[in-house]
View 1 (cartoon, rainbow, N blue to C red):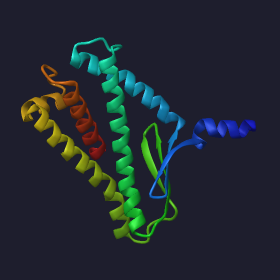
View 2: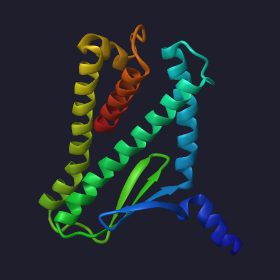
View 3: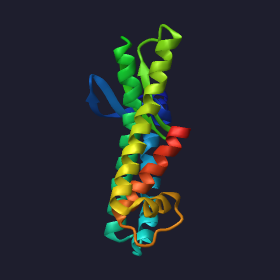
Length: 180
């Protein structure tokens, strides 16, 4: 590998293919691993506090990993929403790449009309809205509406399980993604 190619790969030109969905290459940029690591470290502390255990204990770490996987899965589903809408409009999608700031679906060509552009653009947020609704319902069923709302707002961790805290965090972060 030449020096220029190495620098190109290290600065985001290279990515690692995870798998393919509907003919779309799902890949991660090197920066994704940084966020993955930082999020697991941060969430280990959060779950350590919720479970009243050390952040280095096994249970907070497992919840942190599961929550991080859930977060990246929801980002991927958001991007797949855009991709499927584009494919339905006859626009090819070559890949979805997850990176430090989220994800990006790469289209073969631009949309042909403002209406198609809108359909492709709104599909991701609609998927995220569906994720938020499902998580809110799951949280309300698992802990009761008031307790879950307090957990999602971060106003109380008293008496909530790790699973409820995980659902609350995922609902909250997906709501942030939806607004963003």
